[in-house]
Amino acid sequence: MGSILSNFYGHPNDDVIDPNIGLTGKEKRLVKETWSILNADSVNTGVAIMSSYFKQYPQYQKVFHAFKDIPVDELPTNNKFRAHCQFIISTLNNAFCALDDVCLMNETLLSTGQRHGRRGQSRQEFIDLKGVMMKVMKDALKTKFSAEVEAAWDKTIDVAFSKIFEGMENGVPHDGEHNQSQ
Image 1 (cartoon, rainbow, N blue to C red):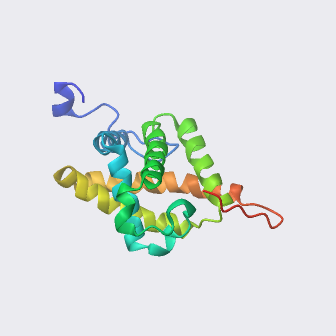
Image 2: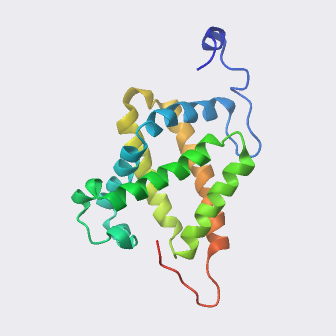
C-alpha cells in the first residue's frame, strides 16, 4: 500500500485533482483501498447492499422479476438473487478499479445507465441506493470508514451515478417502447 516514506510524507498525487472526475489522488486511493476490502467478499457485500435496499425500499424489489415475490429475509439464500448481487458488485468493481482510466469507467457506467433507462428505472432509485450503500459500507468497514473515507465515497458515488444518469437518459426507449426484462 505504499512505501514507508509515503506513510510519513503522503503520496505525491494526494492533493492533485483529476480534472475529469473531480477526485483527488488521495480520495481515489482511499476508495480503492476500502473497496478492495468490500470486494474481497463480493457476493455477501452485494447481498448486504441489496437486502438492505429492499428492506428500506420494498417497492424497488418488485422491479426485479426473478425475485420480486420472494420474502426479503429469504433473498440471501436465493441463488438468482445472489447471482444478481454478484453482477452488481462486478459492475461496481469495474468502475471503481477504473478510477484512473476515466474512459473505461465512463463506458462501464454509461452502459449500466442505458440498461436501467431501458427498463424504465428512475434516478430516485439510485439516489435511495446511495444512502443504503453508504450505511452498508460504514457497517462493514467499521473504524476504517473514517470521515475522510466517507467523504471520498460520497464524491465517488456522485460521480459514478452522474454517469449512470447520463446513460439512463440516452437509454430510454423512444416511440412507446418499454422493456421491463431484467
